[in-house]
Image: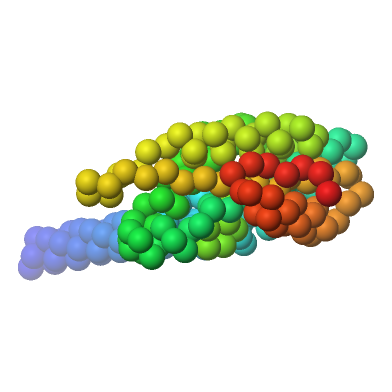
Amino acid sequence: GLIFYVINIFIGTFVLVYATTIYTIMDRYTECMLRVQNEQLRIMALVDPLTRLSNRRAMGENLKLVSSGSQQSGKKYVIGLGDIDNFKKINDTYGHDYGDTVLSEVALILTEKIPENGYAARWGGEEFLFVIPESEVMDGFECAESIISSVRSHRFVKGKTEFFVTMTFGVCEGCPDDDVDKIISCADKRLYKGKNNGKNHTEYTD
């Protein structure tokens, strides 16, 4: 009877240890999966799903960072607001799906042209916004012009049709004590001025 009793205790202990190990592994796995999901959700909340650029919400956080950095360093920063010209016509002519392709390809050009320390976002619809810390209006102008020039020479192909698109930018410089929203609205006014002045260029003065 004693051997049987010992075997039972041994088996019981083994099952308990096995079950505990499995439970711990499953628990860790679930915790890990939750962390991954939370990270994915966090990224989804900050990234525009179509262009993979920051969305407006994430850019709001980046702008706060740049603004507080500017207050600490005493250096200026620059904001550029750009818009794809006649985008409605692109959608009407080639369809919304191809309009999405145009947005994605323009976003890639932006990603390439923004300096390492800068941020770019899809601001809404066919509007894009960039901010470059520790820079002045002419740096923003040069950045916007290099985006415009790359977009202008980028060939879009839909079936047998080839076409080109253009962009217009408004650029404004921010000082350490400026309110960021004021600088965005200044860039917006200049963008609007650029649209009225023939599009396909950058406006950097009022």
